[in-house]
Image 1 (cartoon, helix red, strand yellow):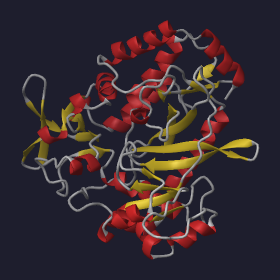
Image 2 (cartoon, rainbow, N blue to C red; image 1 turned 180 degrees about the vertical axis):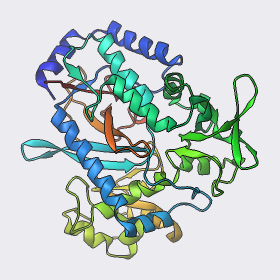
Image 3 (tube, rainbow, N blue to C red; image 1 turned 90 degrees about the vertical axis):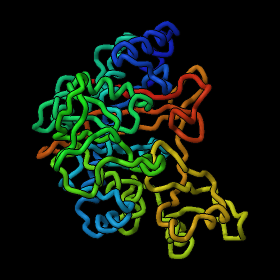
Image 4 (cartoon, one colour; image 1 turned 135 degrees about the vertical axis):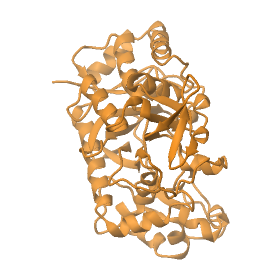
Length: 422
């Protein structure tokens, strides 16, 4: 989207440089990256990234300042997954944006917002690897919020560790050695000096949780950098050795409740008139669409809704999304009336219908124009400020943007955004 930089990169690109990129990532994470990394970064104006970053901050603060919303969101936490000792704010926040056409300019639109960690360690390493493998111009930046590489890692360390020593902090996930995000775990563990453990292997002694160290000792866990997604815990029927609802002598870096409190559940609230935020596409809860004012609310916002003519009616302008799934799981394009009605009435509040956005294909590649999705990564240390820190990009030419949805293609996958420093 900065034509001169795009043309320079495409002209100079070689497969050998791409192989060097993958080799650098494997060497710096000590494991192979199992998800697809794109052959190219993207080059965008800093003003575009800052527009997205500012919107995410505004949306998060709006939600956190709305006690009615927070009360409703809290009721949506599944039974048994409301965790004690909730923090005053989330430590991590991500906001995903599509680019759509608005007159003669590109305009960001919110895809989703989530108070949950992303691949903060891997993404910083990916930016450096792109620069090194492809000899990118020196006058390019990738960090946000006035950060550079040194201050980014310092802020990440402060957010993850708080005031704890590294040996008192554990990154927890479900079966972390077999997660596609393992490269991020390895990078984070090495840079911050913390252990990575399966959350189901933590043990209990009195009011404390413990983990087994590399030399076989049991050490107390003072702070958990939580990467275990509740949706996956539920889907896998993982039985934890400790009760999440009980108040343990442990801090959370990324308290699990915020995964539910700032999530897709917020999108219908953020898109309601008269205070609908312009960056948020129209959306309603499924139960409101089928049995309430939701259909009319979408039509009032300009969404074309087919008249209900029976089970075969197709809603071509809508996406059906489960509220608490991750990585695009369970999303249905062009849902039918029959598919919507097949969801049990008691579960319809767990889904939303959102206007489908037409991503603009803006990245010129040897395989044609490709569409980007931008994720802004925020850090919010205990007692600190909510700070946009880095962006993450997905490139794709499929219906969805996740790397799992663009298989057997080239110049797609996980990527990074660079902007001119001047």
